Amino acid sequence: MGEILGLGISHYPPFSGKNESMANIFFGRLKDPALPPLMLNRENWHPDLLRELGSDDGEAAAAVHRARMAEGFQTCMTVLREFDPDFCVIWGDDQYENFREDIVPPYCILAYDDMELKPWAQAQESSDMKGKPNYWNEGSDYTLPVKFATDAARDVTSLLLHSGFDMSYAYKPLHHPGIAHSILNAILYLDYERQGFPWPVLPCTVNCYGDKVISHKGFVSSLGDIRRPDPPAPSPSRCFDLGAEMARYFADSPYRVAMIASSSWSHAFLCDKTYRMMPDVDFDRDMYQHLVEGDYQYWRSKSLKDLTDSGNQEMLNWMALLGAMSVLDRKPKWSDFVETRLFNSSKVAAVF
Image (cartoon, rainbow, N blue to C red):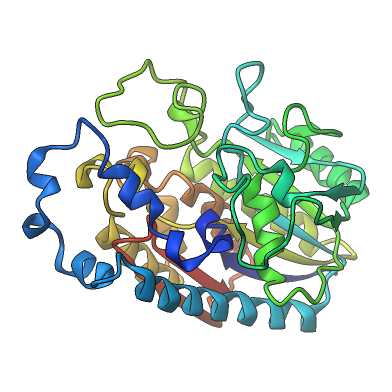
């Protein structure tokens, strides 16, 4: 019988940069010509946002935010090292990296050969880190070896297809020279202390951005930039059931598997109700409370509209994780909710 560990983390790109630039997404939003004039007046901003901005444009708050996130990554990594899996399944979004105009599957398992990646040379526009200083002061020539659980990826893909999930798969990248930043950053951040990430990965990339993945190339756009929407992302319930089916398979396998969700929660730049300035913290708090309680059917009951209205497109990655934890009857052993109004998205770390 297999053994399974569940982890949830964030892949927030600015976390890999410097504290002084961590609020750049927010300040970029203030330059949106379609932003209502009332939102340019600080008197109309949320008190928590003003508190984080402080007198230094958020630099001190960024240090606190980083410390909380780093503690979460280190907690997850400690458990991961103790568990010592055969490989790590990672659910993460493809943000216009390989899912582009020529093909956009609902989700795709990557059965790649082992790769030598250059994170800071290969960063795409969607991760917003190419050519920028990073926290570790690693240069563009920094090389990260990544191993892939190719045989297990082929096997679970076959199982999913036989079980009625029309799972796409890939043996090599289509556009991006490396791997989607949701997968890459999960590795970089778990190994925050740069002690090594020795385990193969089995990535399952999800089309979280749905109707914005092509039209807006999966990233920030102006409030006034209205484009024809693309077809939607897969539903939350389908992603939940996908994670459950994968967990059933690995529970009956001979493998020790870490199953990891990689994403922040509500994204400010996707949340129209806050003029794309702040995340939907109230929605995130509600979802977190039901996560802590182990009320996973509450998660599965959410509609795609619920997620997209709150800027929570990437929560589909966590849907897969909670589907897996639901079928295994696992509740969080430890978790942390890192709330913010300034740094684009709430972040959650969890161990199941």
